[in-house]
Image (cartoon, rainbow, N blue to C red):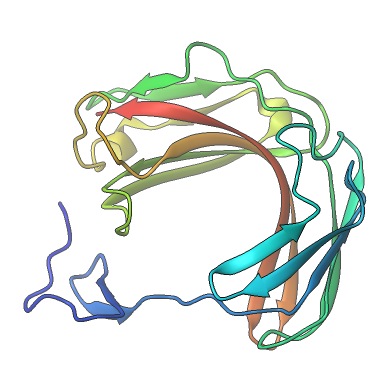
Length: 203
């Protein structure tokens, strides 16, 4: 069921799964980012009021090749300076049409074509309106070599219902990913290289 906070949460707060108002996480700057190892390299990400602006503009396709060593170096700001590298992954390919119908009391199997590149596959099924925190999330991770992940029926049963293709829903996807986690004084930061396929969902 959807979480409900009474009274409603004020500005800058969101209702969590326990029905309590908690602060919405805010972005923080790590200064200018210099990214090397891409097809168009180096690239620079400059912090602005509304996030980061990339220069040059990233290509629409083919940002990196499988096996490329991609390095991110941050100059530091609210988040201290750091440097980390990840490995480029192969393109993500899934079986079927990319639409998943979850049915109560039934397992749901998601399959893909392994690339054997040492990556992980992450499946994210979300329910909830875009612009608000999701009301239900199923998140799974498996080694690429496994070729499939099974969402157990007991987990499917807990996801809020979603009929057909609903407008403005939080997106769901299947993603091939390589990840590095950097420990900073402000907390852990994930650096990822990924190839994502958006999918449709109903329950």
